[in-house]
Length: 458
Image (tube, rainbow, N blue to C red; front, side, top):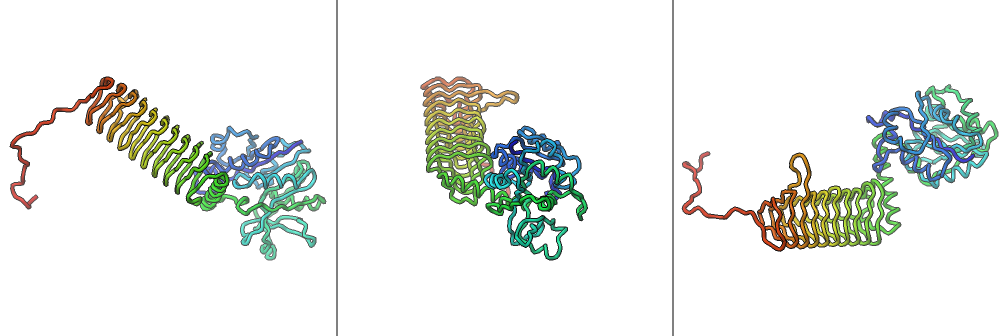
């Protein structure tokens, strides 16, 4: 009957001190719950059931698009109660894997091994050995080292508190067995809750083979309970992503100072310096160099392009062998042709810049179509907004725009035109001609600078 996965995601997360439900807290710019669902999807299950409760509207608004069966848990009465909300939708012959929406770093390989260990008849649970087991349920074994139960920490005896093998909460069992055990749960414990972990003792009593598997690393099983846990998990995730990218050939100057909050594809011999932040979908060609403190968001950058420090690029397409920055900002719908250059303190928006064209210093160019081999001087702006509508500036190939010019859109600068420095252009500048709108310079003869009547006194 296949595999059914139940993800428990109904908790409030009081220790987060946040208006967001715990499972929506961001890790690598994605909600914790999304990480878990993505890991579950790699197993190709028949169905993923997400049991949600606290902040239901927020959870649905943020993640309602996921291909899962949403199961609402009105009252949170423990993990056993939560699984019981979903079990009716699972056929008896299926396997059931139970995951947690606040354990986001679990690896697909670990889950696959757990499912394989359970097979058609056994109960498999994931355990881990900790130097400090405080806060976790302890694994009870008999004299033959067989797992016979789990004791929650608040219910442990003095001797049981010293057990270092602990429960991660992840189990896999046949649905018919699990349905029976859930129906026999009671809440006769210090918490007054229905513990899923009590199913382990029932399985032992029923003669079901219990297999305890170890996670590949402790970090996979770490739950997120507060913002400190979230920060630790963020660095673990970033290190994991950095290692995967370096294994594919990406050079990171310092993997500990790298943040990927989306998906990155990079060609050979590409280098990323420290404190770069990658968001959304980013594609880097071969031989690309990303300087320190850059932000790249949903962009494509061509081969051998150099992005200098403190540059922000978002929703842009960059050609090959370009140079950008430092301290440049390329806003959405910026397109740069090959060998284009954007210098320091330049801002672009909704612009198509041709091959070999340059905007080197302190300029704003928006809503513009700029041809090939155009030079735009320092302090140039396109006046594209009239207070109500945006208008386009068109600049032909080989044009030269002098420093400190204003191009008042809609306006055209034709091929090969030169605009003199300090000009305000409101009409078409003809091809291969010099256009300027500069007042005539003059000197006032005999003028003297004013002086104070009483020097030294304000």
